[in-house]
Length: 225
Image (cartoon, rainbow, N blue to C red; front, top):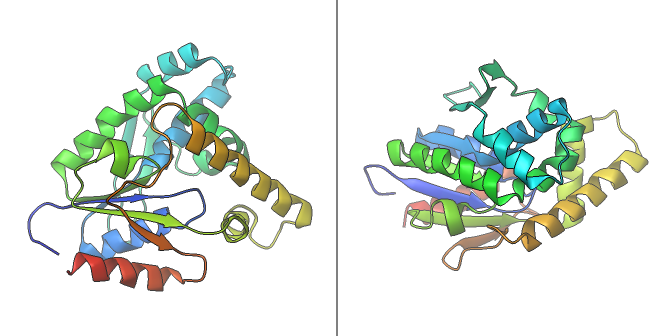
Protein backbone atom coordinates (compact mmCIF):
# COMPACT_ATOMS: atom_id res chain seq x y z
CA UNK A 1 0.00 0.00 0.00
CA UNK A 2 1.46 3.39 -0.97
CA UNK A 3 2.28 6.03 1.63
CA UNK A 4 0.42 9.30 2.00
CA UNK A 5 -3.34 9.82 1.92
CA UNK A 6 -5.36 6.91 0.60
CA UNK A 7 -9.01 6.36 -0.35
CA UNK A 8 -10.60 2.91 -0.47
CA UNK A 9 -14.14 2.44 -1.80
CA UNK A 10 -16.11 -0.65 -0.81
CA UNK A 11 -19.54 -1.17 -2.34
CA UNK A 12 -22.07 -3.96 -2.31
CA UNK A 13 -25.60 -4.98 -1.36
CA UNK A 14 -26.90 -5.10 2.21
CA UNK A 15 -25.57 -8.04 4.19
CA UNK A 16 -22.47 -8.60 2.07
CA UNK A 17 -20.31 -7.69 5.06
CA UNK A 18 -18.91 -4.43 3.74
CA UNK A 19 -19.43 -2.31 6.89
CA UNK A 20 -17.93 -4.86 9.30
CA UNK A 21 -15.02 -5.58 6.99
CA UNK A 22 -14.41 -1.90 6.29
CA UNK A 23 -14.41 -1.06 10.00
CA UNK A 24 -11.97 -3.83 10.92
CA UNK A 25 -9.70 -3.14 7.97
CA UNK A 26 -9.62 0.56 8.85
CA UNK A 27 -8.51 -0.36 12.36
CA UNK A 28 -5.68 -2.48 10.98
CA UNK A 29 -4.54 0.24 8.57
CA UNK A 30 -4.95 3.05 11.09
CA UNK A 31 -7.28 5.10 8.88
CA UNK A 32 -10.88 6.33 9.15
CA UNK A 33 -13.91 4.22 8.28
CA UNK A 34 -17.01 6.00 6.98
CA UNK A 35 -20.23 3.95 6.84
CA UNK A 36 -22.30 6.03 4.42
CA UNK A 37 -25.31 3.77 4.90
CA UNK A 38 -25.57 5.09 8.46
CA UNK A 39 -26.08 8.58 7.05
CA UNK A 40 -29.10 7.47 5.02
CA UNK A 41 -30.38 5.58 8.04
CA UNK A 42 -30.22 8.78 10.09
CA UNK A 43 -32.32 10.70 7.56
CA UNK A 44 -34.76 7.78 7.42
CA UNK A 45 -35.01 7.68 11.20
CA UNK A 46 -35.75 11.41 11.35
CA UNK A 47 -38.40 11.10 8.62
CA UNK A 48 -40.11 8.25 10.48
CA UNK A 49 -40.06 10.16 13.78
CA UNK A 50 -41.60 13.19 12.09
CA UNK A 51 -44.19 11.07 10.26
CA UNK A 52 -43.14 12.26 6.82
CA UNK A 53 -44.61 10.48 3.80
CA UNK A 54 -41.66 8.51 2.41
CA UNK A 55 -43.04 8.80 -1.12
CA UNK A 56 -42.87 12.60 -0.94
CA UNK A 57 -39.45 13.33 -2.43
CA UNK A 58 -39.80 17.09 -1.99
CA UNK A 59 -40.39 16.82 1.74
CA UNK A 60 -37.59 14.28 2.16
CA UNK A 61 -35.18 16.57 0.34
CA UNK A 62 -36.24 19.52 2.49
CA UNK A 63 -35.77 17.35 5.58
CA UNK A 64 -32.25 16.39 4.52
CA UNK A 65 -31.33 20.01 3.81
CA UNK A 66 -32.63 21.02 7.23
CA UNK A 67 -30.66 18.31 9.05
CA UNK A 68 -27.39 18.71 10.90
CA UNK A 69 -25.65 15.39 10.43
CA UNK A 70 -22.26 14.69 11.95
CA UNK A 71 -20.17 11.54 11.74
CA UNK A 72 -17.75 10.83 14.56
CA UNK A 73 -15.30 8.42 12.89
CA UNK A 74 -14.38 5.15 14.56
CA UNK A 75 -11.12 5.24 16.47
CA UNK A 76 -9.55 2.07 17.85
CA UNK A 77 -12.26 0.09 19.63
CA UNK A 78 -14.71 3.01 19.58
CA UNK A 79 -17.27 2.52 16.79
CA UNK A 80 -18.45 5.21 14.42
CA UNK A 81 -21.11 7.44 15.98
CA UNK A 82 -23.87 9.35 14.20
CA UNK A 83 -25.09 12.66 15.58
CA UNK A 84 -28.44 13.77 14.21
CA UNK A 85 -29.16 17.42 15.01
CA UNK A 86 -26.75 17.07 17.94
CA UNK A 87 -28.25 13.82 19.29
CA UNK A 88 -26.43 10.48 19.20
CA UNK A 89 -28.70 8.12 17.22
CA UNK A 90 -26.15 5.40 16.54
CA UNK A 91 -28.36 2.71 18.09
CA UNK A 92 -31.73 4.04 16.94
CA UNK A 93 -30.83 3.96 13.24
CA UNK A 94 -30.39 0.16 13.40
CA UNK A 95 -34.07 -0.47 14.20
CA UNK A 96 -36.28 -2.79 12.17
CA UNK A 97 -38.39 0.14 10.96
CA UNK A 98 -35.32 1.93 9.59
CA UNK A 99 -34.11 -1.31 7.97
CA UNK A 100 -37.42 -1.65 6.15
CA UNK A 101 -37.57 1.91 4.80
CA UNK A 102 -34.02 3.17 4.30
CA UNK A 103 -33.87 2.21 0.60
CA UNK A 104 -36.99 4.28 -0.08
CA UNK A 105 -35.28 7.35 1.33
CA UNK A 106 -31.87 6.58 -0.18
CA UNK A 107 -33.27 6.54 -3.72
CA UNK A 108 -34.30 10.22 -3.49
CA UNK A 109 -31.90 12.31 -5.59
CA UNK A 110 -32.17 15.34 -3.32
CA UNK A 111 -31.25 13.32 -0.26
CA UNK A 112 -28.28 11.74 -1.99
CA UNK A 113 -27.05 15.12 -3.27
CA UNK A 114 -27.23 16.54 0.24
CA UNK A 115 -25.13 13.73 1.71
CA UNK A 116 -22.70 13.52 -1.21
CA UNK A 117 -21.05 16.80 -0.22
CA UNK A 118 -20.35 15.60 3.33
CA UNK A 119 -19.02 12.26 2.12
CA UNK A 120 -16.58 13.86 -0.32
CA UNK A 121 -15.50 16.41 2.27
CA UNK A 122 -14.53 13.63 4.68
CA UNK A 123 -12.55 11.82 2.00
CA UNK A 124 -10.75 15.01 1.00
CA UNK A 125 -9.61 15.62 4.57
CA UNK A 126 -8.63 12.10 5.67
CA UNK A 127 -7.36 8.71 4.53
CA UNK A 128 -10.59 6.72 4.47
CA UNK A 129 -12.27 3.44 3.81
CA UNK A 130 -15.77 4.42 2.74
CA UNK A 131 -18.48 1.84 2.21
CA UNK A 132 -21.89 2.11 0.62
CA UNK A 133 -23.61 1.41 -2.66
CA UNK A 134 -22.29 4.13 -4.98
CA UNK A 135 -18.88 4.95 -3.52
CA UNK A 136 -16.74 3.70 -6.39
CA UNK A 137 -19.15 4.91 -9.08
CA UNK A 138 -20.34 8.29 -7.77
CA UNK A 139 -18.93 9.43 -4.42
CA UNK A 140 -15.25 8.59 -4.97
CA UNK A 141 -14.88 7.63 -8.65
CA UNK A 142 -11.13 8.30 -8.42
CA UNK A 143 -10.58 6.22 -5.26
CA UNK A 144 -7.15 4.59 -5.06
CA UNK A 145 -8.74 1.16 -4.59
CA UNK A 146 -12.26 -0.07 -5.30
CA UNK A 147 -13.88 -3.28 -4.14
CA UNK A 148 -17.37 -4.70 -4.64
CA UNK A 149 -18.44 -7.25 -2.04
CA UNK A 150 -21.35 -9.57 -2.66
CA UNK A 151 -22.89 -12.80 -1.31
CA UNK A 152 -25.93 -14.90 -2.10
CA UNK A 153 -29.29 -13.74 -0.72
CA UNK A 154 -29.63 -16.60 1.78
CA UNK A 155 -26.26 -15.84 3.34
CA UNK A 156 -26.90 -12.12 3.49
CA UNK A 157 -30.31 -12.69 5.06
CA UNK A 158 -28.78 -14.97 7.72
CA UNK A 159 -26.19 -12.31 8.58
CA UNK A 160 -28.75 -9.51 8.84
CA UNK A 161 -31.14 -11.73 10.84
CA UNK A 162 -28.38 -12.49 13.36
CA UNK A 163 -27.54 -8.79 13.59
CA UNK A 164 -31.17 -7.84 14.35
CA UNK A 165 -32.52 -10.79 16.34
CA UNK A 166 -29.52 -12.79 17.54
CA UNK A 167 -30.97 -16.04 18.89
CA UNK A 168 -34.38 -14.55 19.68
CA UNK A 169 -36.08 -14.70 16.27
CA UNK A 170 -38.00 -17.37 14.41
CA UNK A 171 -38.47 -18.68 10.86
CA UNK A 172 -41.15 -16.14 10.01
CA UNK A 173 -38.87 -13.28 10.99
CA UNK A 174 -36.02 -14.77 8.96
CA UNK A 175 -38.24 -14.88 5.87
CA UNK A 176 -39.28 -11.28 6.53
CA UNK A 177 -35.62 -10.22 6.68
CA UNK A 178 -34.89 -12.13 3.48
CA UNK A 179 -37.82 -10.53 1.66
CA UNK A 180 -36.78 -7.08 2.84
CA UNK A 181 -33.25 -7.61 1.50
CA UNK A 182 -34.60 -8.76 -1.87
CA UNK A 183 -36.79 -5.66 -2.05
CA UNK A 184 -33.87 -3.42 -1.08
CA UNK A 185 -31.70 -5.04 -3.77
CA UNK A 186 -34.35 -4.22 -6.38
CA UNK A 187 -34.81 -0.63 -5.21
CA UNK A 188 -31.07 0.03 -4.88
CA UNK A 189 -30.14 -1.44 -8.25
CA UNK A 190 -33.01 0.06 -10.24
CA UNK A 191 -33.19 3.59 -8.82
CA UNK A 192 -32.62 6.33 -11.37
CA UNK A 193 -30.05 8.30 -9.36
CA UNK A 194 -26.76 6.60 -8.34
CA UNK A 195 -27.93 2.96 -8.52
CA UNK A 196 -26.09 0.10 -6.86
CA UNK A 197 -23.66 -1.34 -9.37
CA UNK A 198 -20.08 -2.51 -9.54
CA UNK A 199 -17.63 0.09 -10.83
CA UNK A 200 -15.84 -1.10 -13.96
CA UNK A 201 -12.48 -0.92 -12.19
CA UNK A 202 -13.66 -2.45 -8.89
CA UNK A 203 -12.42 -5.82 -7.68
CA UNK A 204 -15.28 -8.26 -7.11
CA UNK A 205 -15.15 -10.42 -3.96
CA UNK A 206 -17.88 -12.98 -3.20
CA UNK A 207 -18.02 -13.32 0.59
CA UNK A 208 -20.59 -16.14 0.68
CA UNK A 209 -18.15 -18.84 1.77
CA UNK A 210 -15.48 -16.63 3.30
CA UNK A 211 -14.93 -15.60 6.90
CA UNK A 212 -14.47 -11.94 7.79
CA UNK A 213 -10.75 -12.54 8.32
CA UNK A 214 -10.42 -14.22 4.94
CA UNK A 215 -12.08 -11.29 3.16
CA UNK A 216 -9.84 -8.80 4.97
CA UNK A 217 -6.71 -10.75 4.02
CA UNK A 218 -7.87 -10.94 0.41
CA UNK A 219 -8.36 -7.16 0.28
CA UNK A 220 -5.02 -6.52 1.99
CA UNK A 221 -3.39 -8.67 -0.66
CA UNK A 222 -4.55 -6.25 -3.34
CA UNK A 223 -3.45 -3.23 -1.31
CA UNK A 224 0.09 -4.58 -1.09
CA UNK A 225 0.52 -5.01 -4.83
